Image (cartoon, rainbow, N blue to C red):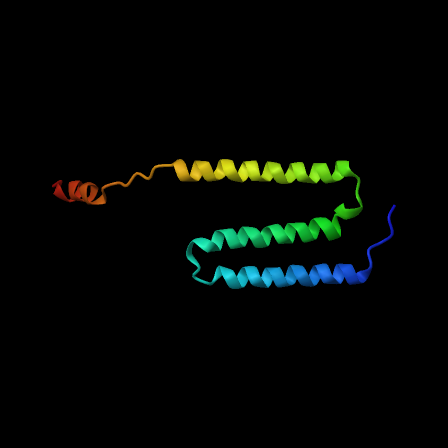
Amino acid sequence: MSAPRPPRALTGAWLALLALLGLTVTLAYQPLGALNGPLAFTIATIKALVVGIVFMELRQRRPLAIAAAAVGVCWLFVLLWLASTDFTRRTIIHADVRLATSDIRARP
């Protein structure tokens, strides 16, 4: 078993995650248009890297553990890609509300 992480590294990771959380909340309220999504994903990726490096100790692991973490990240990208293609390919059907309400009023 490896030696426990020094508190300085844990404190640094905690402060980095808090700073990134503050940045995420701040940017969520800024009108950046199309940049909001990519910036949020970039910040989330940095948070995941901090967690993986400090708390999962991926720097000191065997290559097989690092490969398993990489496969998990790749699988996440596949799921996000599939969800985005589903979202972008759907058609929006608008109902004509005026027609439906005029039929109800016309009846005696």
